[in-house]
Length: 321
Image (cartoon, rainbow, N blue to C red; front, side):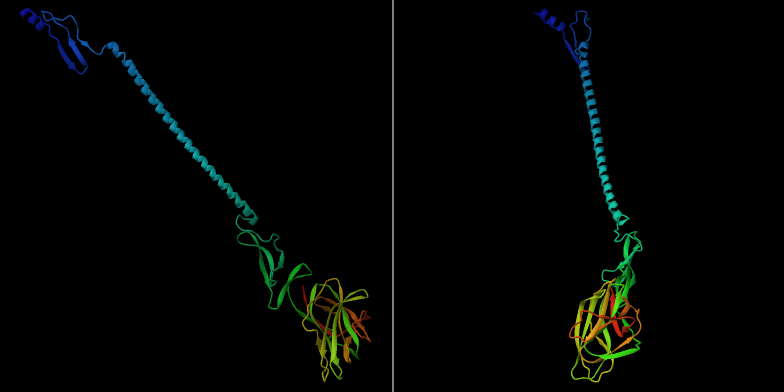
């Protein structure tokens, strides 16, 4: 029994731990010597398993995180630079081309031919096509018409400011005659479109019972043919009156360039009319051609007899149009 205990004492197992792991010491003999070397539990061959730590090479998969380089694809978000294409909306700047209608990319011209003239919309001025400071062309007032004047296209071409014009005709007479139931008037050639605003015949009504009826008539004349285009009747007091102009009052009768017209009047009581041996007088809308008349009338004449080289005293108020 004693020997058995001794044997156990001799067999002593030492276990030590260090930073490298668990080490063991094998049984020593009676001399205290061992036949085994110090052994590390981590078999060196197993350390080849650290080749598995080569799996940490898998941590090279973190190179996959290099795929975060794909996050460089966020560089594709640089494609948002394509929104720079919205800069193409700069092409909407081409709408500035619509400005070309304004000739400068902002304003719009309302006329094209520089120097061209026209009447203003209210006929109160002459306007001219001019270039403005903004580079566009506009209708600009060239001449303002004076009060009582209006703008018209003279001869259908040139705008001018005009007003009503009263033209006395054959004012310096050399002869006269007294008659009744007659029509006396002057033929005019019209060289400008115009509007007759009134006309007057110079008469000296003889004293008689009752008033004198004066009928004013305008004829359009083509060759020997006449067409009644205006007629107005007035009643005149003939009691102790001297020679004077008798008027239609305000009227508005358009006459056209290139045509001939006869302006005159007829009366039913004795009255003296005046004339001169002269023609060709220029008036606002044309000139005098000759005197025309008809006698022994019971109504408005349908034909007239010429008196070449003569004209009757009268006055015509007109405005060009």
